[in-house]
Length: 352
Image 1: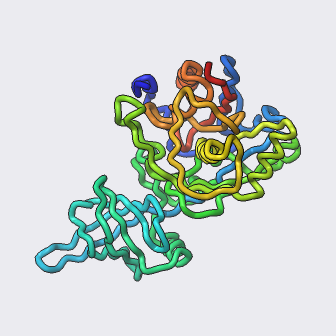
Image 2 (image 1 turned 60 degrees about the horizontal axis):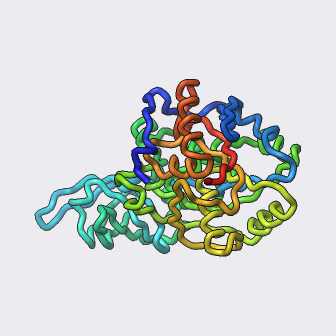
Image 3 (image 1 turned 45 degrees about the vertical axis):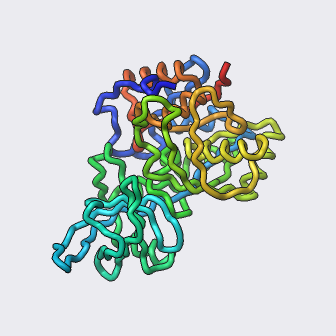
């Protein structure tokens, strides 16, 4: 499909710079077929049914932005470096984006202070760099908590995080460290909302997908067939697989909290004859209109960037025309967009 079909104009003032406070006071646009209804996140228990199942992504954002120095020597001057870890490759080994990457060579050491350093292993053709820390994962996570910054996307205050983002850019159910971007639909949940969902008989389970830096990037190709999707690591445990199977067997609906949850569910179902089973590995599923969904009935998701794979996904789920109308309604109505913004609840529309 032509990528320009997924373009739209978004005024800069519609991009949220801080989350709603409290989180569950954010607005919610209920998109059910051609009907649009303005709600809030606190209405979610009344919009779902007893027996429905919420599937949340329990990934936790790593303080993955580091500032360090590559010491000089042999005629080279010191170079101040900024490193963004984007993907764990092994114990202590990470793929990253580095600035200025052109001045790094294999074998260089980057010092981040207080004993934390990494060695450049490999430079990748797309501009990425593989670096190795001399720490196991547990020790590295502790060091990142001390030395790293939360990697906000550039449309939030230029990507410059402050102390409040340490909490604001994490979900309350995040427990598995590994993401470099938040599962943003999950940011709306609070203990009070969870309790209200429990009282309404709405079940929940968790799966894991470590969100990568490429998730929110616009597609630069002119046709979706020419776009190469990034891979992300994901896992579904046996308890989650059983809960999904039980919900479907009992006539309940599977409600994906975020596009990340939807992508892993549909990835696994596509490889297992429409069933969700316990699984872990990489997924690079790219969903565009015409895709037939096997598992997810409703999707809770934030408002996404134009020309992004995420706007393509929601257009596949609810219909491109409906999503263009919903986004126009949201822009005119003052909804807040992107990671810290408001949300929409989408009901699945099968392609004709």
